[in-house]
Length: 348
Image (cartoon, rainbow, N blue to C red; front, side):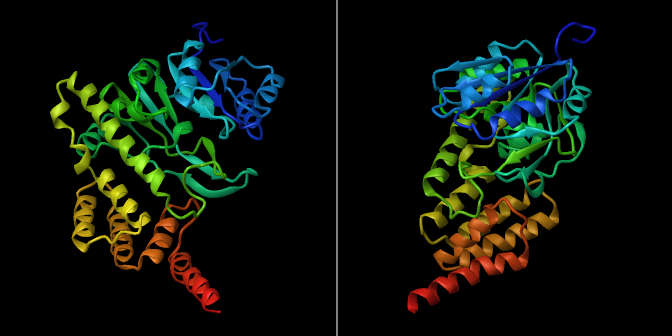
């Protein structure tokens, strides 16, 4: 333990049927042997051999009835004491030395710390650079983005560290089983956000991820994502109302995220998107915080996808949402080459 005789950071690993990866996640923490860090592993009613794998590692661990990620994380919270908490997915890993770098940035004024993750495949091979690309800063300026858009650029779950009092908001969530939604967007109103540009973890992409891997967009997943966003915004508005700021939050259905995902859903369902809708989305895009280069690139994607026949538009969207490196050549081959090959095979 440190001089204060108490850990500064709790790492909660929640696992459901990740027998292939959970030991790597555990060892990525244990191997750092940091005295200011406590670790607890929660097996969320796995039906494979995950619990046997966890038990062999000899760490503090609990096996509970399956209740989903949120309930498993809440259980882990109750079995840790540190003032800051990192919820590490059982298929992800921390990089060597990351815990020391995280703890060095934490104090009582910090509400959340974030860092990028390197994408790896199921075998641990790197498949893309840091996601997302984050700037280094410490302040509360993200409140402006949340009020205007309802969101801000943030890593997947394993790239976030939350102050413990912020985690209590999970007790109020009854509309989803995800962990970090409301905490991400409430954090800038409760303290400083510390953003690190250096990737400190690895995000594993495999067949059980909801997105990526070049799959065609799934309307069911997009519907869930849109509904989850609306529910989160309602929760966030109630939270902000207690701070006297509820009326400053953009209505959910006017937010860029809602409009963008609605565009994706229309493409996924085979509906034609009017150019008026595309232009409305582009206007919303250009009022946001992204770089001019990003705005230009995405505007071109929106216009082209809106004009393409639906099958090609779906391929365009799948490429956009893929997890690998994207290039103009790759885009053209995906959208035009694959479709042509299918058409030729059918005509033959």
